[in-house]
Amino acid sequence: MATVHDTTMRPTKLELLADWLPTRTWYAAGPEAPRPVKAGGFRLDDPEGEVGVEFMAVTDGEGPDAVAYLVPMTYRGKPLDGAEHALIGTSEHGVLGTRWIYDGAHDPVLVAESYALLAGRAVPQHQSISDAADPTVAAVLDAAARTEAAVEPAEAVDGADHTDVRLRVPGTDAPLTLRFHRVLRPTADDAAALGRVTAEWNPAGAPETPARGVYVTVRQA
Image: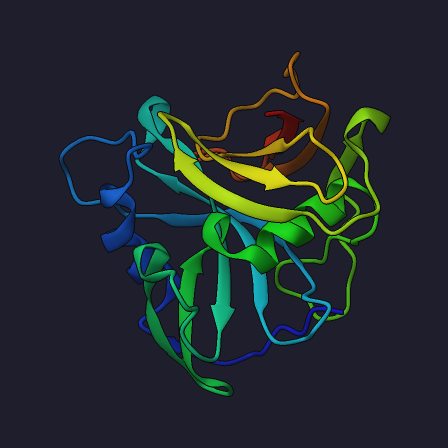
């Protein structure tokens, strides 16, 4: 189960995201420097116990112009080979030391566990409490997209409001696409999806009224 340490990170994740978000094609805010605010999310476990896996929702802006973003992140104790382009930054963790923080859509551990969550083989964990499942996260997957084989990420491509990751499914000729919905919207409808993960976040200006929408979908490639 996910362990959450009560300690410091310098720089903080939000400080790193303030610099990183404007470099993304799907960042939708204006010319002012971003001021991301943590708005929700959940964690998943790495079966090997080596990589931290978090789905963080952040809001940026105020009032009706505020935008909610999904930033899946992984935390590693050493650099991930070949993933320099996906590095959000490094931070000094008060317990674990230097952590390399990556955009999780480009990390094979997060991608594999995202599919495991859809397939019912992974349990979503509370974002800030150790060893606690998060019952507010829901995942469904159609039989047409279900496999017991370990999927392999082939490539990740950013779009206007999402990142698509092509998945190889060993033993089949029908690749799947895992879509991370970078711009979060309060809806659960996606007619083309064969599966989806829905979760909550706190909209800017209305933290007492959580919104709910799609974080991740899967479809035929």
